[in-house]
Length: 130
Image 1 (tube, rainbow, N blue to C red):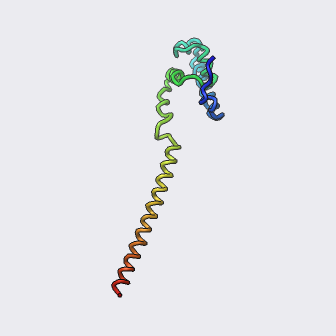
Image 2: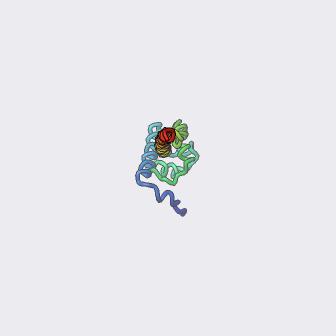
Image 3: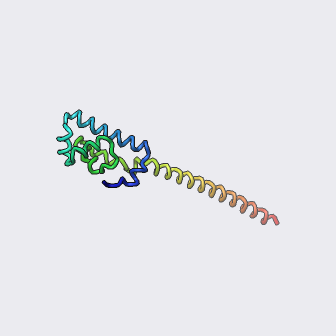
């Protein structure tokens, strides 16, 4: 019996629920197509027990098997968008925070430059009057 990888043991409950929903949705897709477990498993190139685990939302099922099921539904193209940079909200938030910090730093530097210019101009006038 193989050990469950630590990463699987550490999955948050919400993520496990999403995986279970995916499995249930895949089962519904198979049933709507009036495919048996045996015929769907054969088309995917997996055993019936593997397909049952997939449909039960077993998080240890490989991505390749999930992709195969999605391919049978003509939904494998959706995989390309799962981690697309344009959909990465966490990175986008970091970029926005960095841009805001840069904007504040530039505004502060501009203000300091204007103050220095005013001080220098004032000192030039005072020196000229002496």
